[in-house]
Amino acid sequence: MKSLYGSRRIVKSLKTRSKRVALRGSTQISFQLETYWSSIRVEQITQGLVSAPVTKVNSSLSGCGFDLLDARDNYLKLKGEGKDHVFERTVDRNVNYFIEAVGNRDLSDYTSTDGARFRDFLLDKGLVVSSIKRIFSSLGPIIKLMIQEHGLKAISPLVGTYMPSCSKKDKRQPIPIQTIILVVFKVCKAASLSIFQVNSPRKTVDIITPNAPIAEASVTDAIPP
Image 1 (cartoon, one colour):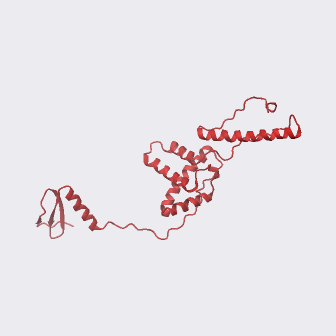
Image 2: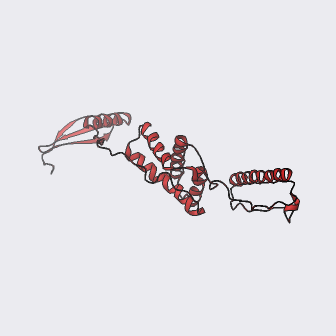
Image 3: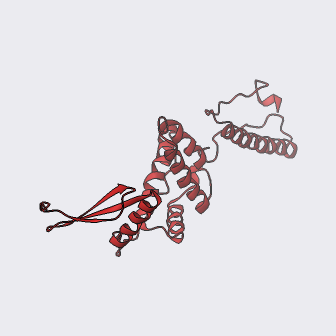
């Protein structure tokens, strides 16, 4: 192989600061070089050629070299400055949901099918459509930012994912007044408070006083409504 190259050393920049991505890229390049050199050796042996025509090595890596965890780390580094722990916890939770559903792969390997699988995964967990839309709207910018920052030839798998229409919406019911009264009495009892009830011709007013006996008193002046 020495006769095919003018230098004893080959240097190539992987254009990344991530140790994991660099190791992955160097392994792929080493494998491609070994495969290329093996084909030259076989050609030299079978044809007896000392200097066979050399085809230029294609040094491009398969895939874009970044996975979903890399996208998460990049998003937290750029967007997480000054944010509280709830922001980071929400990002981690949504990324872990996606990895649990379709796996952590190279960003260029994801397709729109993975977005549909992720939607079905969340539906099976019992999440309503509105919650699933919030997760998609939170996870989409994480992938999009990584693609834009590094000029990757990848498409977000969450773009264009169909969301079923929710015909029946759960209406949040108000807390019953009996429950509120029961809670107030329990709090007053625990705090050694008593309820002083004032009756008037117009309305009844409950006044909470510390260590006062429960009593009733009538007032002559009507309390305005």
